Amino acid sequence: PIWTALGLHIARLLAERSKTAPVDAAEAAEENPVLVFGMTPEGRLAADAMRDHDIPYLAIDSDPERFVSAASDGYSVVYGDARDRRLIDTLGAAKARAIVLGAPGFAGPGSLIPAGGAGAPARFIVVADTADRARQSGLGLRAHLAVAEPKGIELAADLLAQVGIGQPAIAQWIQDQAERRGLLDRETEPEPEAA
Image 1 (cartoon, rainbow, N blue to C red):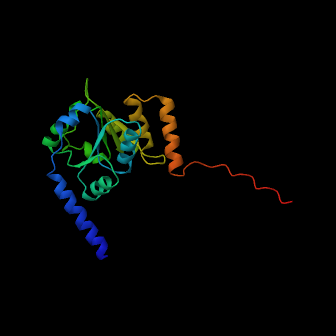
Image 2 (image 1 turned 135 degrees about the vertical axis):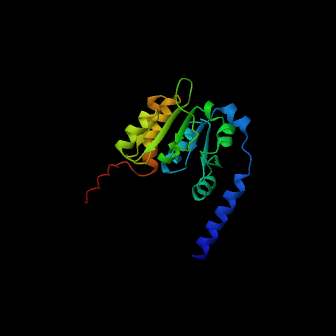
Image 3 (image 1 turned 90 degrees about the vertical axis):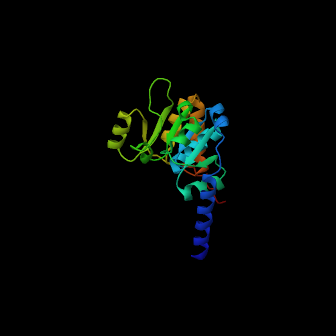
């Protein structure tokens, strides 16, 4: 218990310090990265898809534990909130290649995520049920239920297609993800017959 408490305390301190770390807006705007709000399992998979295809991305999270975990796992992540207009403007969200919302709450009334429309980035969101999918789709978001394993694979595949990755490469990436996670049924080798 004491080590857990100490670890959480250090994680919070790191998250607090990173709040003041400036984001290089010029660099982010130049790359027109995919912005991933929320390093949930679905958000992480979207970031993995971008990283595996050398597509610039930037993850943003306001949860200290998710932020520290993502940063320690090597993701390109900054601490911030989707309701912070300065952060959204600094990141150049209106010029992003795409925006991924790793949880339904990011598209709520307090969100400053740019609205869809001509020239706006495609917006993807993870939803909890079919009613939420219908509601979010009605708002112009590409809504995905995370029903397959790994969580968020549907969203990641759609995102890859939207940023210009071809179907054969997407299919191979999905297979690679399934293999990495041990999700494929492996054929068992026939046992040699005893002599």
